[in-house]
Image (cartoon, rainbow, N blue to C red; front, top):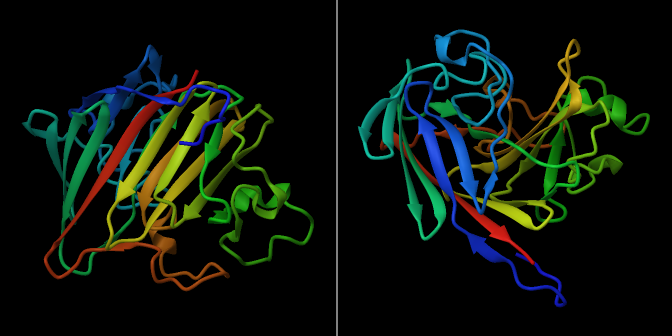
Length: 292
């Protein structure tokens, strides 16, 4: 955390979590210091979904694996019931893999530990699809210069000639790739876009005096942070505001794009790959702070 010398140093705020194993292992609450961090949407029918159904944007944090966009929509795990295996522990069985998760609260931090088991060579993308309840003044803090992939929905917001026909994404440096200030999470301006901060594994969301730090540990797999910045620009019929800050394994929204170089880089590192041992383990650490 970075603080101004004339202000009190930020202090850690203990966080508490609630999850719903029956309905996709969804995180339904992430709260601390009198604040709820997770956004709740108005969509209905989340409790009735089955594998293959279209995504229901109910808010919270969804476990998206083996893809985010693409097929199946937001992955295969969110639409299945998870089996409780112990306090804060659960597992979900999908067609090609099994995902186990254990969440603990350690010294005020939320620590989620994952283990995915599949055939060696299996490729996947995972994202902690966290939709956050943030004010229009909030911002996302990540290392300056982080390569940031903008997706086609951002093309019309870029200077003329920036987007090259046929490219899957355009890559430029954080926080203002191609002059687009992506670190600003408001005010609402009628736009909606997705981006991936390639290689990022430690970011902060700052909203007034509150901050949320998200750290992803998995040294042998590609790590990134996906951003969904919907400033009442989606869906077209009834747009609403929703902000997703999503630590991820891989560097693409859609697993089907993992073999593409996108026009800017080699395809290697776009997806996580199960090694010879048949398992991938990783850890997500979430910490809350408040400054004076």
